[in-house]
Image 1 (cartoon, rainbow, N blue to C red):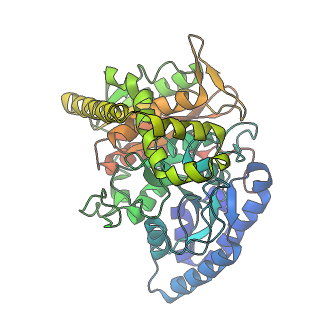
Image 2 (image 1 turned 30 degrees about the vertical axis):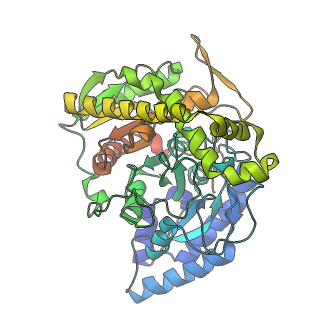
Length: 470
């Protein structure tokens, strides 16, 4: 194998493994060496499982050499966000409140990755209790003084640095798409109910999603193919099976598709470089043959208030024992959110649920009225903030970092629709900018198709950050 894991996608690694030009042990050792090279600066990993990864790689090589029982991800190294249970390893959730004892079983998504032959090299850093956009102590590979996004910040940094081609994340208000966008990679939040959350620590049960952060859109599709499907242990999962092959539509382009462009509030204001990159991306999709329809959905201006009216009470309910017995172990800002959730009148929570229904219905009416296949937005209105930055200045207004990021991603948590981010440019400081593509419920295939068409006809995803595997 020439080059390193950093230059390869899941498809590239899998092809070389099948052809016998490399082995899973070799690829896994490169991933582990990559952690050694980069993690003193990135802190992307909370835990590295060297022995377990190499054992799994040896098993993968046996399956590959026998020609029997090899799965679609056999031998490919991946990483897991540290709120997702893995048998034999602790789940710390970025919090001193969580035990160091190992979990006794795999989460459903980990079990499915194992069945597909993936090699898990470790667990990635998360913002404490999956509740934030900074993910300390993880850093952004494009500029280590800046945040890697959150709460799946370690997953974003690990993929962007080329340690692994895919890492799992969770997304309650944007926690897959935010780190993917600021780290310059692809990230997919599937439809609510497409992927099981059984065995994943909860932030807000009615908003949480599990999905991949990956080097390419194709890697997102390949991962979703493995993860998607019903699970009795997570009742909201759709009972019918997913499409036979998410990758089958990736090469079909966008000619004839109708795309709604959302650029008004809450997607504005945005930084000038973000607005420029977004407008260029819209024009590029038009040049590829897509029909573009400007749309405005005023109900989305209530996104942030609605999101936190739901997150606070649900998170407080899930963590009520921790709040009662060890509140001092929770970050003060997160503790305050949870505490407010405990005293918030039930009527306020119910109003939040009602507002979510209004937002969901408004989005779906727009899809039906304009006969849309997808909507496109800037993933975030700003690029990566400094690690200690509190506010973002848009000229016409200042806004705290968390609200600034969540206002453009959370609409699709509230509606439950699938949403993908792909790189679409850089700002004047060389920081990545993301394009968000959201589709109809359970139509991840079209979302991935659009993202793949954009990715294949631009060069943004080929750029590599200064901190990367060599």
